[in-house]
Amino acid sequence: MKRNLLLLGFMSLLTIFVLSACATNDETTSEENSDSKEEEKDDSTMDQDMEGHMDHDEEVSLNNSTGENELEIPSVLESDNEDEVAYTVRAQKGETEIFDGTETKTYGYNGDFLGPMLRFHKGDKVKVKTVNELDEETTFHWHGLEVPGEADGGPHESLKPGEEKLIEFEVTQEASTLWFHPHPDGKTAEQVYNGLAGLIYIEDDNSKSLDLPNKYGENDIPLIFQDRTFDDEKQLNYSAAMNEDGTIGETSLINGTLNPKLTVNQEKVRLRLLNGSNARNYTFKLNTGESFLQVATDGGFLNEPKKLDEITLTPSERAEIVIDFSKLNKEDELALINTEDEDGSILLPFEVSDQTGEDSGIPEKLNDFSITEEEMDLPVSKEVELFGMMDKVTINGKKFDPDRIDFTQEQGETEVWEIYNKPDEMGGMIHPFHIHGAQFKVLSRDGEKLPENEQGWKDTISVEPDETVKVAVQFKEKGVYMFHCHNLEHEDNGMMGQVKVE
Ligand code: C2O
Ligand code: CU
View 1 (cartoon, rainbow, N blue to C red):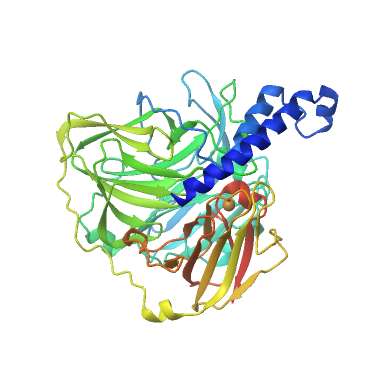
View 2 (tube, protein in one colour):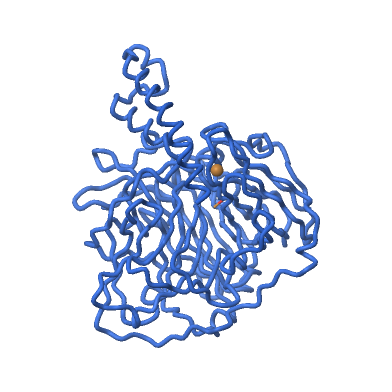
């Protein structure tokens, strides 16, 4: 509600701003135009841009999925040899038939578009050979993974075209759904937009003993939600679509599939939701209003399943939910919708087959995550102030500088970080705040106790305008780690800092 009000105020101000800006634009002669950065853009793209800037992200609704294509499931990457967990991950260029009969130029890992799923087990000693087959620099960042700084793939770990690098780490954290994507300085948003993103599943003894649906691609389904704008040639044209305040598009892709549907048996199905968009927030809901169970946050299981009617994820956040398709009314057309859009755009229609599936249970107890009183009582030792919009975004008044260490923290030491989203005269917007190399515990929002479905490991937390969020952060490993807004344009615009763990 608070956000809606802020947004409203913001919108009316911006309408005035945009109207006058558009008027100026109309008077601009082509000569003046050619001097500016907008050189190749004609008036209509200018207008579009202005509209895009007008709103932070909720304005451009997503197109409804027609459900004509069965959802793609990312392949599972095989280890390079049998006695080791050794993967090769290549960033490469490709072409993908997203629209029938047209090849769209895309980026992918080990393929044309997006990437395979990497499965790790807790305790694994993992080797990953990373190879850059692009024509530009890139890095390989493991979002949510607790690894030493040098294996983390931040902007310092850049690989030039043709270069490769072997990284090694041990998986020490619990079962969870993580992901990987590039992180080159100033180019992260564009490379993710072009298709660089893949999934990591971590399993452990607990996840294997729980009776949750776990047949990959059958009743354990990853869903990578992304929004894009395609140009007249059905190409991804990042510089044309780019919005300094967060690039959003009207075309919804799930696992890279346009107009997807998911066919399921009459059984419980686990959906691993990843908001892989550059900037769009999603609120997931069933069109029938029926509830589902949330079982996991970014970094692990909740202690108990939490019954919900809807769940919001900001960019890079994950949640695992379970929907019981044996119970839902089969007469209804079922779909997952996004209620951030005014009319609730249809993201993923479900087709429920006649087949009864497995009878996997939902255990009452999933985990033993806890926040101790000691942690609750810790004083705040790091303050993070998120501020600004467009390319004027800062953290504690500063923009990212690769040569500046903003914070230091001791390995294994728990510290409380207080994150404040300072509004501006236009209201402000949500910033999804992410810390590398750690899963943290969220202690409070505006001093209040958290909803039960946020009482689990997190690596990204949405912070609303004027909100203060406290998190308890501990790094298991050493190194330099990024912390930043996961609105990828904000990140590229410098809303990022570095913490050195020693
Ligand atoms: Cu998804 Cu800096 O990361
Ligand atoms: Cu931001």
